[in-house]
Each structure stands twice: as C-alpha cells, then as structure tokens.
Image (tube, rainbow over all chains, first blue to last red):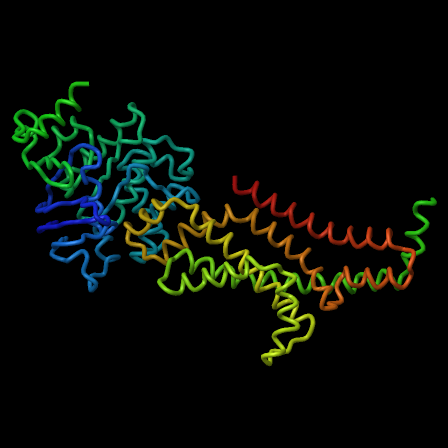
Length: 242
Length: 220
C-alpha cells in the first residue's frame, strides 16, 4: 500500500533520510520509533507529500507521490493525518472543522456532511461537543476531534505524528483507545510515537530509526524483548527505565 | 461668552457650507482610495505571501520602494512628474492615485504579515485533508488572519483619511484646504476655523476606531 524504494532526503547538505526501503501493507499497523531527530516524522510526512523526497521512489496505492502528474489533492483524500498539535481550525466549531473537507473536497451537501460528522464524533466519544469551539476543549478532546476530522474522509490510510506528545498524561489514554479501536477495524496505520505500551499492544510491526536510517524492523515481541541493534537496545533502555 | 464670540463670528452658514464641501472631498478621496487600496493591497499581500516565483520578488521590490518614500513625494510625483510622460490627471484623480499607490503598499504589508502569523500547521491540516492551496487559504488561513488584521487595517484607514490632507500641496479642495482659504479670507478666525476642521477629522476617525474596537470584541 505504501512503498519506499531507496529513498533519500536532504535539507541542503544534511541528509534526513538515508536509503529508506519500507513496505506497508493494507490493514497493517506500523509503529515508527527512535530518538528525536532520527527522521521518523519526516518519513511519515513524505507519505502524504507534506515533505518531498530527494531521491528514490515512493508510491502510495501504486501512485508515485512526488510525480508531477499525480493529483496530490486526490491522493491526500485517501490519507488521514493526525498532528502532535492537533491543528483544529480555531475559528470553526467542532462540527464545522469536520464537515469542511467533505463539503469542499467531496462535494457533500451540508446535511450529508453533518450526519457523517456526527457519526464519527460519536465514534470518538464527543458528540456532545459538536457546537463547541476547539479552544473550549481539552487537549485529549481536541485530538479526538482531529481523528474524527481525518476519518470523515473515509481514508484507507491514517498517519499519526506523535498524536499524544502534546497531551497531559491523564488524556493520553482516551486518544490511544480511539486509535486501538481503529486498528481493530483494520485501518492501515502508520504511527510515530513514544508510547511503547501502545506499540507493544497494537503494532503489527515496529520500525526503529536512528540518524535517518531504518535500523530494525520487527514484530513488537521480538523488538522489545530482543532487539538486534545495539542502538535500539540503548534507545529502549533509555525510554523504558526512567 | 468672550471665548465663543470668534466661533459665532466664523460660523456663518456660507462658511460652514464651504467647510462641509471640503469635508465631502476629503471623505470622497479617502473612501475611493480605501476601496481601491484594499483590493490592490489585499491582492499584492496575498501574492507575496503565496511566494509565487518571480511575481512575489517583483512585488517585494515595488512595495519596498513605495513604502520607503514619503507620501508627499508620491503626491508631487503623480501630479507634476507623470504629465511629462503623458499621464495627465485632474487634481482629485491624482490625489486618489497617489494615496492608492502608497496605501496599497502599506496594506499589503499588513495583509502579508497577518497571513504569515497563522501557524503553518493550519495549512498542513487543510492540505492533508485534500483541500487545494486556494481552498486552504480562503477557508482556513484568510478568515483567521483577517480577525488579527482588523485593528492594524483600521488604523491604516485612519492614517489614510488624515493623509488626504497632504494633497493640499496640489490644491485638492479638501477640508484642510478649504479651512486654510477661510482663514486667509477672514484673517482673524484661525483658532475657531482650525478647531472646527480638527473636530470634523476627529469625529470620523474616532467613529472608525470605535467600530474597529467593536469588531475586535465581537470575535473574542
């Protein structure tokens, strides 16, 4: 579904991604971990062309992402993205946040868009906040709205860029629960996170990155109990033993 | 009573009518310049924000040039220099053109920086939901930026209204100009005449800034 072949990415002289080869299959939940600055977010952001790759090929559903002939807006409809800082539209009510893209991109009627939006708001458990503004919501609620906003486009892929990193600890659970439910329904998910509990429980595969390279790919049990790479071992010891 | 006497002396019906005529010219020149410079400034500011290759750089040069010249010079230039290359305008047209050129440059900067103040994450959120760039700009960035821009834009409008008085140098028959004529004719009424002129400017500008304040409060 998503495939990187020999991908490199440079910011000037600095190489952010090095020799990336990665294949993500339909329905798979892939969790990307690694120290900060290792290129995890960049890797994720390349998948919906928020970042461009410098070399190699990247295809999503068989379509080349960076190709000039590719209709990137059409491709993006099919890829939901969740950000660390939510990025809800502060001037719009929760419901309007969710109905904007379906109405403007998919051409849905107000009624249809609202009905679908309410369905997803219920799904993430905050239908009672439909008429509130984002600023009136807690961080956890805002992130759940952001997830509903992504889901309403009925994407085949959902990307999560550190979805719980900006949240107070007591709100992390509610967001992870929504993500777990999504994973169970068979959504293809790529998640950059430091939540190792989530990774262990939900991931089909862990991708460990350091200094722009994918150093290890393994199923969670293997990765957490017996990481092959020295740097992965070091990373895990730092993150798990604090 | 002694204090008011000079006012009563000056405040004849004819004199008031004459001042109001000037006032209407001021308002007319200001209103037309506001509308034109809002359109041009909005367009230029947005184009510069969008970083369209060549176009944005070209506009940057133009805007910077205009912004760094005194308005008075631009008025002189429009009225006295442009005829030499065959562009001859009436006084009022010249005043409107000069003000529009200057204020468009100022407004474009307000609009550009207002747009820039919106978190790039908002654009990323919009674009990744499948909205194209123009849709993202018009539904997400612009509405948020406009709210922030209201106070500086209104204060620019107030400046513009006051700056119309600079067109006195090309003899635009505006409020200040007519005030000066009255004073020259009567010789004695300098304080009352300029007080009335000042009041007229003040009332309009103060109203403008009150309206702006209400707009600001409404958004909170």
